[in-house]
Amino acid sequence: DTGVSQDPRHKITKRGQNVTFRCDPISEHNRLYWYRQTLGQGPEFLTYFQNEAQLEKSRLLSDRFSAERPKGSFSTLEIQRTEQGDSAMYLCASSVSPGRKGVTGNEQFFGPGTRLTVL
Amino acid sequence: LAKTTQPISMDSYEGQEVNITCSHNNIATNDYITWYQQFPSQGPRFIIQGYKTKVTNEVASLFIPADRKSSTLSLPRVSLSDTAVYYCLVGEDYGQNFVFGPGTRLSVLP
Image (cartoon, rainbow over all chains, first blue to last red; front, side):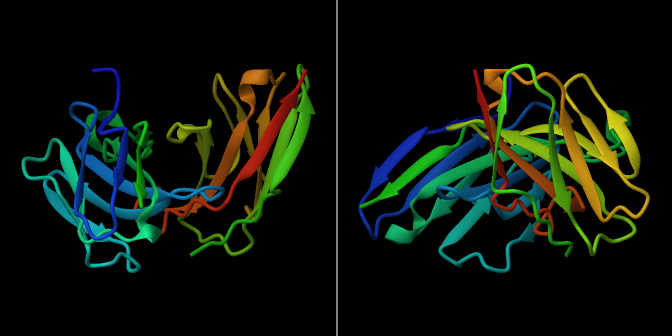
C-alpha cells in the first residue's frame, strides 16, 4: 500500500448533476478526512470518520454534500445538484488515531485529490 | 480557535536556511503546532509538529518560544524542490478546528 488513492482524478460535470468521489485510505488507518481546496486557499475541512462513524461535519457544509464510510475502509463523497461554486479540488486524507499502535500525533496522509469542474 | 498569521510569500536561494514564522497569539494550553507542505497539484504533506521548545526531524526544525505565541519553521539548506506552500496550524490536529490558512508560498531561486 503506497498511500491514499482517490478516484477519479478529474471530473467535469454540468450544473445540477450529481457526482460521487471515492477515497481509499492507507490500510489500517482508522481515521479518514475530506477537504475541499480552491485556488490560492488552504484546504477547508468538510468531514471526518473514525472507522465507519462520521464524527464531525463542517458547520458550513451544505446538505447537498454527503459522505459515507460503510465498512470503515474506503469512503465516498457525493455532491447532489452540483453548482458552479462546487468547482474545487477535493482532498481525502487518512491517519491513525493517537494511542493506536504507539502513535502520539495525528499525522494526516493526503491523497492526490479529485479536481471537480462544474460547467 | 487559535488564529494564525504567516507571511503570504517568501523568496530564498538554493543552499540558504529559510525560517518561516507563524504568529498565534491566542494559542490554548492544549494546542499543538503543526506544519504541512504542499506542492502544486498534490495534497499537503506533514512536515513537523511540536508543543514547546524545539523539535527536529530529518526535514526541518520547529522552534517554539516559552510563551508559545509564535513558532518558526526552519528549513536548512533549501533546494529548488522545496518550492511549495507551507501551512502553520494550531489546535487539535484533526477536525473542523484544524484550519489551514492561505499558507506561505516559498519560492527557492537558483
